[in-house]
Amino acid sequence: MTQPHPRVAVVGAGLAGLACAERLVRGGIDVAVFDKGHGAGGRSSTRRADALRFDFGAGCVRARTPGFRARVEAWEAEGALARWTAPWVRLEPGGVETALPPEPTWVGVPGMSSLIRYAGRGLDVRYGARVLSLERDAAGWWLALEARREGPFAGVVLALPAPQAQSLVRRQSALRERFEAPSFTPTWAALVRLERPQPLTWGRALASEGPLEVLSREHTKPGRPESPAWVLQASDPWSEEHVDDAPEEVGPALLSALEALCGPLPGATLVSTHRWRFARARAPWGLPCAHDAELGFGVCGDWCVGRDLEAAYLSGSTLGAAWAEASR
Image (cartoon, rainbow, N blue to C red):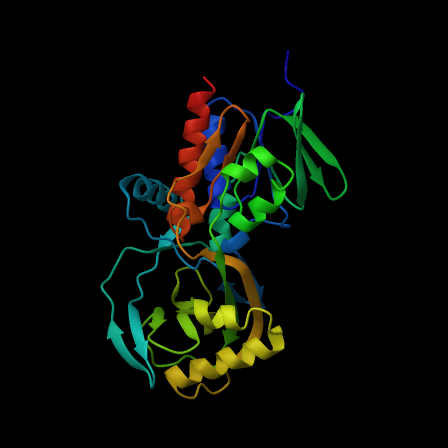
């Protein structure tokens, strides 16, 4: 008899959740993925402004492990990723540049959100589905959404920033006792357009001091419009200090920091600002994922082992493989 409901619910359709779901499906497990966003992206989101595109979260992909490198090269061969060959530099005040060692880097085409959309192809992904709480009874797991209840599921995976995952298990005492999550730092991002190109050769810069940490010249990425578009990401300490500031205060402050590094930029205008409240774990959890086969519960995310898309993928795929093996 066909089961009337998917067997496992994955909450969170970022790369960790999708990697876990894909591995579960390959293991013969039915999966439904729930995400509060209205489209693919999450922290790999791309924002459009007229013809411009801004990757204002995870701005690129790097692959340091053989398994993820093989996955990235497959995505590249399939057209979901392209090499970003513009140099990276360290930037001192006044525009002094120091070249950084080259490292293979990829970006989603035509934006980073395209990669997440591609990674979710063939999966049952339900956007606009904010999960408010979890309940477990004799029938299994139930998800309380804003307008409905979904379930029962034999298992649930939380592929979310740790503080958000913790809030969903607050009623589950057995899980609260085992699931001690690290604290997170926020990140402010500012999206900036320029009237005309600047005589610069780099694509991405790491600021040596000041409020900014990363400057990305989005128009140097493959498949992007040529009109100058920059994404500025503030440092962890500055973002934490200003976490509750209004966007109309943060944007001008980051623009001023940009000009302190690069000199006057005529025609630089702020498109928007965005706060990632749970951007990065202060320190990785130390385990690739958490899996309780008896309860039918798992947790994964970049914060488990690192702070980038590779960490997210490895965490999700590790959990999916362990779950599939335990279900045999």
